Length: 462
Ligand SMILES: Cc1cc2nc3c(=O)[nH]c(=O)nc-3n(C[C@H](O)[C@H](O)[C@H](O)COP(=O)(O)OP(=O)(O)OC[C@H]3O[C@@H](n4cnc5c(N)ncnc54)[C@H](O)[C@@H]3O)c2cc1C
Ligand SMILES: NC(=O)c1ccc[n+]([C@@H]2O[C@H](COP(=O)([O-])OP(=O)(O)OC[C@H]3O[C@@H](n4cnc5c(N)ncnc54)[C@H](O)[C@@H]3O)[C@@H](O)[C@H]2O)c1
Image 1: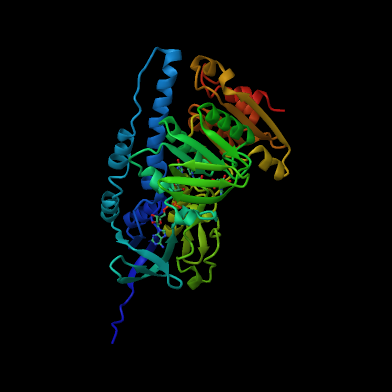
Image 2: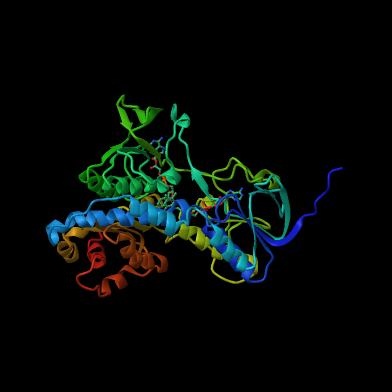
């Protein structure tokens, strides 16, 4: 007769430990709740091991090479022999500890949580079953509820032949210890653009094949155009409105057939064509939810239904670590019965860490027009500011602001440029707090800074 195992009793079960899930499990355990934290792979999720952190280490390395290349014009000859070895070493040793989460597990356990590696699936309201790597099953009941933070995986576009080839996703690219001679990047979103520029700056011949009509299509068209121009200037081939229709691999070479009839060949193919939410194997059907959905609908407290919260990429509010962490704080307060403001995304910022960085907050001009607002826009090239002039090579960029003229406040802004991700901070405050444009006009902007271009863009509002 088969033994019937009792459910282990917890207050909270967190399934998926992306940045937000890890933080929530830590905080609720520290608050004295009995917490079960479950991840099928690495505690911390995509960001520290295959996303933000290792990719930004690579960006930092590539930017260093670019600055060295600018030295001749500014300060004299510098000779650099690019090497991927220190990059791969930094990623492996400093960022990911060899893709090992022992430290993160210990940190979570010392906060008081029970940490289990395995596949967590809902098994009815307030219940989770965990399939452990050894084949065993852990059954858990969550008195207060379950928090889902399962994240996404790289999408595999339905291109003929692709599935049978050893193509790279972000995971392979970020674990690369050697560089290919040539690389085709399928997808011109943030992942595609950041990594394409990194590899190109290390001497790889890179072609970006972008389905849509421009790069980083979530951003202002001016930002897309400027970025494409810079990348082309650095020697990348940027193909927009291009569709891969077939892929094959033989003798170490990928052959990529395009809709136009052209054929590309490369040593490596990086597929960065969007993400698939990890919702299909989560037992959602056991609580009356659709496992084929692309997102989980959440309210402004991150509740999906009674006793069930969701945070991170799967909520569809923006696939960024800062969204995961923001939502984590809100769900945590809700679970602990603490007060605090509900979720609001009107001033959500994002930064694509190309050089120049492409940063934005709030609405684009088109989104503001589509929302029926009385839109005024202002913009200015960054290289024409005093700081841009003194900066010289590498100063290309722009500041664009979008005003709701009826309310006299900014509802969106974009900064492209060196440190664009830092400059956007001032505009994020303005959009978040609804600072009147008249107040922004009356401020003193330090001279000669990049952020002083904000004043010029505001002066251009019309
Ligand atoms: C190359 C790259 C660069 C990026 N750069 C940036 C950046 O610069 N800035 C930024 O803000 N964002 C960046 N992102 C996005 C960022 O990584 C994600 O938005 C972030 O990780 C938050 O995701 P998440 O909280 O939804 O969960 P994830 O980080 O995706 O983690 C989900 C976790 O859930 C686990 N899991 C899934 N299903 C189950 C299950 N059934 N049972 C148990 N465990 C499960 C997974 O193993 C994983 O550990 C980048 C992403 C990539 C790929
Ligand atoms: N710096 C950052 O904050 C950062 C960096 C990387 C990723 N991310 C997050 O991760 C998410 C995923 O990034 P991503 O770049 O994979 O996805 P994405 O969805 O933003 O961009 C993918 C691009 O691929 C294109 N595409 C889709 N199918 C294609 C095909 N068959 N052939 C050619 N192109 C195709 C799309 O037009 C799209 O522009 C982003 O939306 C972002 O939220 C953030």
